[in-house]
Image (cartoon, rainbow, N blue to C red; front, side, top):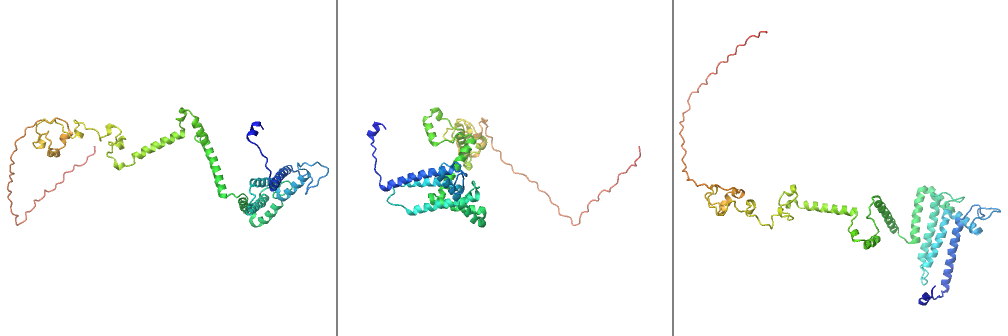
Length: 384
């Protein structure tokens, strides 16, 4: 420790209370005992002298010595393979006690009792599940004496599958009592992990580079060059093109009844489309020489000749009667030959000749006799 650090921050050793001293000392001893017990269980050898085994004149292979061999043999006989979880449970209890060491004023005995009941349920049901579904370990039952008793009681009534389901239900309830975790939260966490794994695997399979970490992407984006910012991924380009095509199709078929012309169905353009002047009729001055769309006549205004189709009216005279009589002069720009009006010819009355009618005779008139039928002479056939 440097001098500068000691000058800035002085470390003062505070004295603990009697209860705190006892608590920390017990936690240290229990944690060391859990470590020693795990070493004894992992180094168990059936040839070592123990409660269920007798050996003569052989060295002890257990790391815990004779006490470790005896304790490991006893735990395996009672709990089976679940004896390996006992040191872990002891370490967890020490950590929980150390975490809540500040709560000296009030102890929730109800919560502590629920945790103890949950831990007991977890141990018993785990032994039963191991006895039903796991193989034996050395010369001990896989679930120990506890698992053998539970499996012997459940298998005649529920069989192995039914007993497994019943023990799993009790095991889940014990986990909730011991940890305080809700199974809904556990299911959501498991589902999110599975979905993240599947998403990552599918993106790697399709060789898609769009799946990146948000934090890493923000850091890379800040340090990227301007040319790299303009680059787009293949998936982004495809999505942008699909959205543009969808927008064009939606605009094309949004209101087919509101179109002013059907030419757009064949040419792709509309007469009322204002994008180009060639297809726009609104806001554009009409050509005075255009007969079809300007409303002017084909002949100049100073042409004073008469048109026989307009009943003697002048071609250039803007009369409503002449415009309503015909549209031929507005549709064709060919010059009209001057024609002199001809005098009207008086109509002559039609002469009808009288037809004399004769009275019908009283006696019927005999019909003429038909001519007699004479058969044609047939010539005899002569062989050649």
